[in-house]
Structures are given as structure tokens and as C-alpha cells.
Image 1: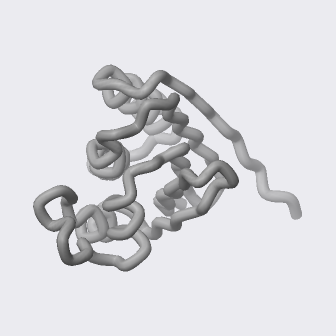
Image 2: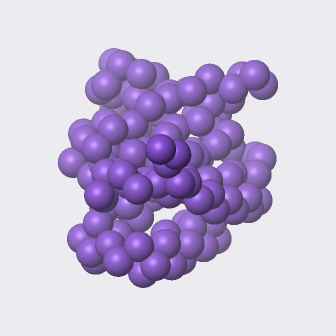
Length: 134
């Protein structure tokens, strides 16, 4: 039996205007998937929590949402903020970064079912947020 997946991608120049547009995409997906407002809020806050830490990025940011019967994966890339990477990999804010970085791991653990970090070939990385809905 094959699993049906659908993918939605949006790439935007890095800047203050990306969060509302990514939230709008997530809102449309939540509406079509009949997700609760609480689930939508969780997804939007999870994306916001990652991207608010991406302060130094100078390149385009992509959000790719892969929908399956079990839930959805949200991939944010390419990211370059080293404090965010260190925090996500270690699972807590590393010493010396507490004044520069939120405890995004604590936030993500309360909002999504899982998150992973993937190194990209150009030295940047991607974060994948998984939310089970089915």
C-alpha cells in the first residue's frame, strides 16, 4: 500500500515579511486538513521560534510542508545561525549563548512531536518540524 503525500513549498527573501506569509500558508493547510486552531497555533509558533533566531541570514528562506496521512513535516532551510544550530543539536542553549538564543528546544518540544537538523552541502542546515495529526 502506498502512502499519499503532498508537498507545498515557498521560498522568500530573508526579512521581516516572511513570517506572516509562512503563517498564511500554514493557515491554508490547516483549513484544508481540518486541523484545530490549537494545532495551527502550535505550527505557526514553532516556525516563528526557529526563524526568529535566524537573525544573520542573508539568503532566501524556504519552507516546505510535506503532508501525509499521519501528519506533516515542515522543513525550514537554509539556516545559518550557529547559536540556533548548537542549541538544536545539544538540546539546550549552550554556555555563552544564553544572551543571544532562546531555548528553542524547550519551545519546540511543547509544540511539535519531533524535530531534526540536517546539514546541507553549502555549510548551512535545515530544520524539520514534525507534527502528527492522524
